[in-house]
Image (cartoon, rainbow, N blue to C red):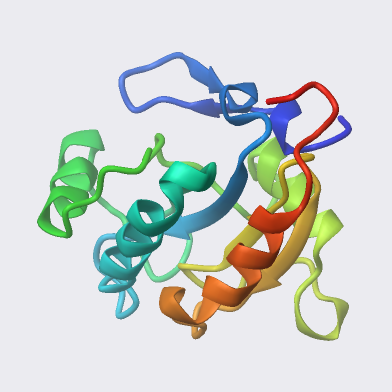
Length: 167
């Protein structure tokens, strides 16, 4: 694998969505949870999604139940939580982000952008990865970083040239 766009994401209704559908866009990939103290960040993530979508930016949400059992619901309950926050960005099927069952996308993200002190494990819900138009991971942000505080990094990523394939 050479970049994020080489992976697929599981869909709540079954099947998978190739991330190549977002090739050439800047992405913010976030492990989300419906019953977490950081769940109100959904509103901030949606605001970023709306603010920068026309410039080629998307937020992609990946529900995960590995942190305090804070994403226990089925696909319908996960979708309902997102609707409570007005979420229109894609929210995929629940995955694991750590351990032997970690989704291959998250194994890649963690390898490209280790956390504090070089740790690879995701420490909690709402860890964020900023991905450039070329599919390379640019930066990792802790759950404590509010979405609105990422605007500068997103704008910098959006200002980078589009890949040679023109997408």
